[in-house]
Image (cartoon, rainbow, N blue to C red; front, side, top):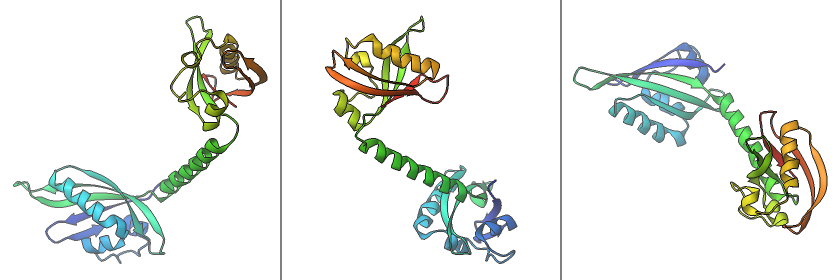
Length: 229
């Protein structure tokens, strides 16, 4: 689980009291943090200092809590991530007196998010660049559970080029090709229901094209989405 520490700021003196857990997050030895607001901002990544200072000041002025994410320098020289949350306490006249907050080390989570983002970017590049047409459709069934249409959820540029169906995402096959043969709905509907993948070659009269198709169900038995290559 993520490490979490607490702190307290005296607004009049800008003195900060830190918990041992927060010193540990920054990689500081117990009792070595010079307890001032300025010293804290020295540990924050320079590109984040102005932003978080302004966000905290705005929250204090508006008498609300805040939640921010920032980068900071660990004592070992690495740059890590923290989530900071806080709330000011006010005097009887409404002036802010103290701010209490927590700091949570979210470095692992941010690294995971970055890796996922890079993975998604690589997938998108592959998705857009392959020569094979690829799409994900959601099969539509009538009240008798008979497949009668399908809606395009995703499609790569090659799919539009090979089928002639442009701007297909969000539209149904019947909207795009009103007299499309029922074979297509029945085939993809069977894949959606049984989970059994299929491979076939088929000519479509209204589309005037031959297709070599591989179709498989996505996710699980509850899903009616089918991936088509």
